[in-house]
Length: 157
Image (cartoon, rainbow, N blue to C red; front, side):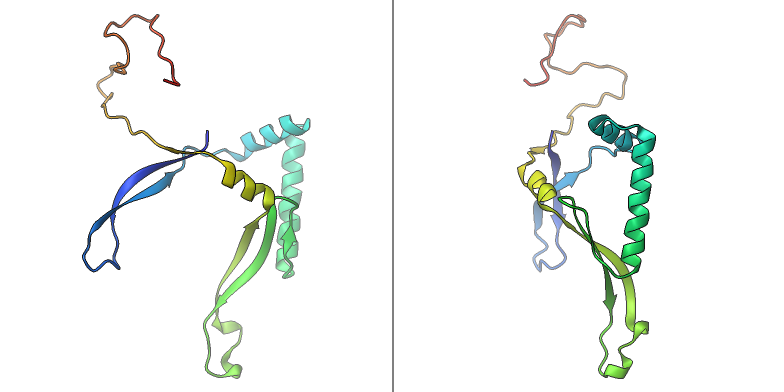
């Protein structure tokens, strides 16, 4: 199925002429719930969904413990998680202490499997419907004009 995008009109603040530009923006077409993901993994691996949930919960606990210890955690071809901080600079070494740290975060670097998957995925422009179907009709405009239920519309056409 691949990634989907729409084209948006945007004016950039750094552009002195305030010229409108057209930019492709990715759209998210849905979200997979944790339960559904565990079911899918269970079907792939031949394990019960509850077992998958238990293993993922253990994985998250192990990630938290290791990141809390300041370690990076590699998950095979999935990628690497590592703790990181953002801090303000100081003019003197004595002033550079923990009070200068203003953000703690976790950085994720995808592994080769995820990078390859993203590089090989298809990209499709999302077609926004040009008709308003809020009046209750379902005419798609692709048939012959009659409302015969036997009309087949090929979705790949």
